[in-house]
Image: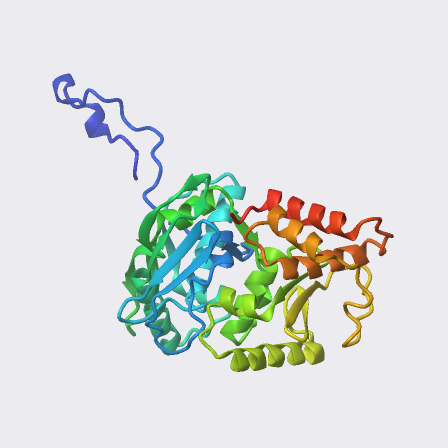
Length: 362
C-alpha cells in the first residue's frame, strides 16, 4: 500500500536510510469517484461564458468573448470545440470532488471514474455507441484550448490550457468498452473546485434535449439563482450562448423553447417567457405568482426611469446590460409589493450599484 513502510525497510541498516523522515500521511495521486448521490455541480466561470459549442457538428470557429476587462478566447482542435454535451464529463467530475470536499475527504487534480457510473449519472445510454461518444468527448475536452484572464479561486489567471489536461482509459472489457477512465483536470477547473466556485444544477439538466436549452438553463442558474426573476435581451442572450445562428433563426429557436415550456413546464427551476425581444426566467419556487403583463402595457405599468437615470445607472454598473437590469429591477419591485417610489431614478441607480458591488464586470 502507498505510504506503508515494509518490515524490510525497517530492518535496513542505518547507513542505507534516507536522511528524510518517511512520508507517513501521503496524499493519493488520484481521487477515485465513489460518491453516487453527489448533486450535479457546474463551475461558475464556464457557466458565465460561452466556452462550449451548441453545434452537434464539428465547430471549428475560434471565438473570443469580452466583458469589461475580462476576456475568454476558445480555440478548437481539428475535432472541433468541446460541446455542451461534452460538458457532462466536467460536471460529473466537479460533482464528485465537491461532494468529497464536503465530507472532509482529500481530493486531487487527477481522478479515476467508472464510465458506466458517469453515463448513468448524466442520463446517457450505456451501449457501445455511448462509450464511443464518451471517448470523443474526452478528445474534444482535451483538444479545446482556452486563453483567459478570468479570476478563479482568488487568483487572476493569464493562461492557455485545455479543459482537461489529459485522459486515459485504464481498463477495457473484452468487448472493447471502456470501464474506467482517468482524467486530469486543468488548473483552472481545479482551482474553482477548491474555492467552491460552483453552483448546484437540477438533475433534469441532463434530460434537456437541446444544447441551447442547457445553455439557457446555465445562464438562468448563474444570474437568476434564487431571485424571483431575471431578464435578458435576446441580443445579449445570443452572445452569451455563443450561438452562430442568424438573429431571425435564434429568435425562432428561443420562441420554440418558450412555447414548449408554456405547455409542458419542462424547463428546470425556471419558467421561461418572452416579450418582444426580452427573455425572462421566473423562479418556479416563488411563493406567489405575479400576473403576466399583456403585450403593449409592460412599460405603462412600470416605474418610469428618465434618460438621466439610465445614464447614472450605467455609471453605477459598468459592463452590465442596463436595460436587462431595468427589467430585473422591475421584477424585484413588483415582488416587493410595488411600493411607492419617491425617485425611480435614484432607486434604480441604487439597485444597479449594489448589483455591481456584488458582481463587478468592469
